[in-house]
Structures are given as structure tokens and as C-alpha cells.
Length: 292
Length: 292
Image (tube, rainbow over all chains, first blue to last red; front, side, top):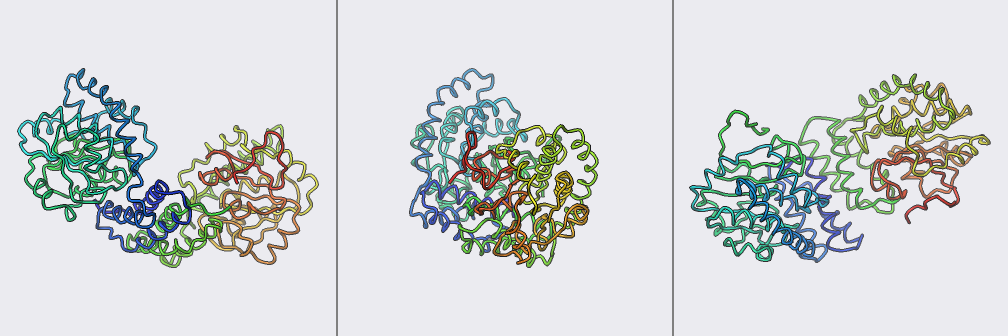
């Protein structure tokens, strides 16, 4: 997905939020915004928003001297999700189609996002996502592809959401490689966050090699790219991964909740809608094509 | 009021909205944002937001070559308000306290604001404002001061809102000088917009000499400053005038609807609340003091 002009004010909102999470010093925070201001003319609209996000968060780190402003928030998100985990497991066990419930719960976990909407309400959202039909729903295709998949790559998104991902991976019952961000960026999950979430019990965890809040293939490690190319099923969680991969012709299933109006528009859906979208899905009756 | 860090993302939102109103050329609009990006480091947080707003809208004009991007929108706002005018008049005539109703209607008209919230719903808002008690309500003081006032200065805000101002000035039944912006900025009313609204029938219209979306005294004409100093009652409409004058010790009544969370916080009220706030009001029981 390209960068839309509307993303530019949002980069400043995110820079401000991250800088405030890092420190309580108005002059320093202003300096972050000054430096992000200088970046604007260098943003190519052809690049995806997380590529600029990467620069924005690098600026926050450089100016504030704080490497991981969301460290405490991430730990708290993981704790909260781990507390919910037994009840999530029960929901899956009581479900008619446990895989369907686990997929929906994995999408519900995507509400934990301090980049797009810091005011999320986790438990309320879990119920909403379970009850509401995804606006794009390729679940049937997912179930079929999963049955025959041998090399599964799972692209993680936020810390805390990772606990929900663990539940889905358990339910899938197949060997999975789980990719985390190379280093802290917003509240995205790093390898350390994945381990804290217990993901190492159900998957093999690797770093993507990319430090953007998404998966910019040109910035990923050769090890990761090897997994990416050989995978016969890729599960891509969240907005950042969608933004950076939406032009790829790979066997990707995007599982996300649209929290931003620009991504919602790009997907042809409404803010708040969820999707289980297969990148290679042919246009069938009832499937809304994307915006150009 | 000083510029808060939260105002900075908002300057970009406003620049984008104004540039899009001016033209449909993504590269040019991006250039506007690039130039606004360069401005960020020059924003002194001690200055009021409209002082930066002035620079932002000047940038929009310079890059797009369009002097008044909101010309058509302003004309439409005035037309719509003039259509409502007979029904507003009737509301006032049926009221127990016509002045009170006219003051509230003048505040309701403040919802016409393409800077703060382009998605306003005029008629719905008129009803809401009439029914809901202002969060800060110095109406009684206003009524008393008005009775003895001899030199009244009215600081206009948006085009269209001016029709509601006309109704209040009629109701006040006193000679009034009405100050408009020196030149088009957002949808703020210029002298031409005031005449189009029929304000010349009830007041003497002057330009403030200031081209910011507010009243920056240091940028006003000596003629206007003379009115300002000699006035024994000043009615200040809207956020921009409040932002630029809130530190003044003058007999000002601020009539506005808080559409922005930062101004609401500065006033110690909630977004959507309205105020009739006297600048010189002593702190009485039940009156909430402002935030520092």
C-alpha cells in the first residue's frame, strides 16, 4: 500500500505519542516533531507508511535517547493477554468450529495497537470480533489451504496480540515459523516479547530482520526471505504487515482489524471491520474488489 | 493560549484539508505538507495556534496559487444560514428571554467551522446548543454589562456564523462595531462575507487588520486597536479569537463551542461544551477555574 497524504498528519500524532511515552520533557518532544517535520519532504508517496514509520520511530529514539518507549506498555499488554488466555482457550473448546473461533480471536487480539488506537478496550473487542462477520471473509479458503500446508510462516504484529496468536497456532496443529520485528518499534512484538508470550512453546521464533512496524521485504534478513519464499501459507497479522505486503503475489492471508480510515479505504471496507483476506483469492461473486 | 504539542499534527490536518479545497493535484498538495514540515521547527510554543495557522494558510496560498480555497464553501455557509434566519428569528421571538436565546444561537452558529470540524451538522447543533446549559455560563454578567455598555466591539469568526451574529446584534439593540479578518483565512469571515450576511444593516463593519484565524493584537491595525482599547464590552466569537486573546485583561465575553480537545482542556471543559465566559469574572462559587 502506498503512503496517502492523510498518513502525514498521522506520522506526527504517532511521533508525539511515542515521544511522550519516552519522556516528559516538552522541549525534547518538540525537537522530535521538528525533526519529523524535516522528514516530510523526503517521504516518497510510493513507499508504504511503515517505511516512514521506521524513520519516525528512529527519530524518536535518537532525540529522546530512549530505545524502547513502549517497553512497560508492551509488558503490561502481554500480562493482560496472558490473564485472558484461559478464557480464550475455553471459548475455543466450546466452539463448534474451534479453528474458526481461534482465527477470530487472533484478529480480536489485533486491537492491541498503540500506533493506531491507544484507547482500545480488549475484552469488549474480543466479544465484538467473535460475533461480527469479517467484511472480507476467506476463512473457507484458509481452512482448505491450511489442511495441505507444509511450510507455514506467521508474521506477528503487536506484543500481547502474540498470546492470541499462540492460541491460533496451537489450534492449527502444524509446525509454524513465527516472525517478530528485529528491534522495538511502537508496541510491535520482538523475539523477546514472543518468548514472554509463550509463543516459543508452539512455534519456532525468528526475527524478520526488519525494524519497521511492518514487513518491508527489502529490509528483511536473507534467512527470513528464505522462509517467506518457501512458505506455502503465510499468515500476516495487522495493518503494518498488510501495508508493506499488500502488493505481493504470495499465499498470504491477512488477518486484521481496520483501525485506520486509509487502510479501511484501501481494503474497500469500513473502520472497525475485520478481514480474513487471501492475497491470491480470485474475484468471486460477493467479493468486493479493492480500490485501485 | 499557548501552542500545545498536540496542535502540531493538527496544523498538518488543516493544511491538507485547505490544500485539497484549493486543488486536486497530489504532488502540489504534498509540496504544501513538505513546506509546512519545514515550518515546524520555527513554531514557538509560546505563540498562539492561530499565529502558526496564519503561516500554514499562507503556505497553502503560495504553493497552490489559490488565494481563497474556501470561497465557495463560505458562500454556501452564508446562504444556508440566511435560509435558517427566519426560523432563528422566530425562536428568539417566542423565547421568554430573547437575549438569552440570541446569545445561545450566536454560539450555535459557531459550529460552522471548516478548520476545527468540517463535518458539522448545523440544524442539529442549533437545537443542542439551545437546550444544553453552557459549561461556563456568565450570561447574567453579560446581560448586566450589556445594559450599561456604550462602546461595543464584536469580534467575528466564521462566514455563515455571521448571520447568527446579526441576530444577536439586532437583539442587543445597541451600536456595535463588528470586526472581520483582513483577508481570507480558512472559512473566517472577511468584510465582504459580513456584508453578504447582512451584518452591515445592524453594525459598523471594520477589518481587524489581522490575517490570522484569530485576533493577534500585534498584527492588528491601529484603527482596530483603538476600538479594542476603548470598548467597554467585547464579544469574542469562536476558538481562534479565544486562543489569541485568552491572556488579555479586557472586558471580553468569549462565546464559543469547544470543538478541539486542547481548547476544551485549556478552558477546563469537555469537547462539545459551550461557554459564555467573561475574561474579568472573579472566581465565584460554582465557577471552575481554568487550567494553569
